[in-house]
Length: 179
Ligand SMILES: [Zn+2]
Image (cartoon, rainbow, N blue to C red):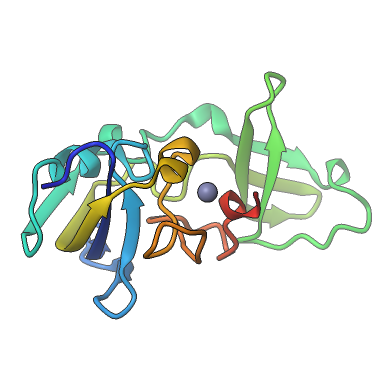
């Protein structure tokens, strides 16, 4: 049964309210996470609590329990000159910047019009209801190392390759695993 400290392998699909598939993992390449470590959105994590191997569940997650509501303060228009001179920027590109308190925010370039660049620091899935269909494939107890790191490793508890559910930042690199 899924409780805090369980490493869970899931097959899942994630659709938006229009029925478009945003992300998925199948049985051949399941998504693995550590339950109770906030590796997945809160609304999905709480819905998976107590499930057993073989269980299937459809879960609708509200924006508040998902990637948050859209914050209009994170939609900004800046001048092209604020980017490094040699930076090639184009619509759809993402870059990370830090707030004064040191928090990293990923901005997406929404539009470039002359010297004006519209950027959006909301998560691409902010403001959206998320429709998950999940199947619990397998589970095991987390290793002490996984508990310490706050994320799941490979099938045997060692560092492996992984990706984060719902992440669309254009990179499959997972810097969790550079330690
Ligand atoms: Zn680790």
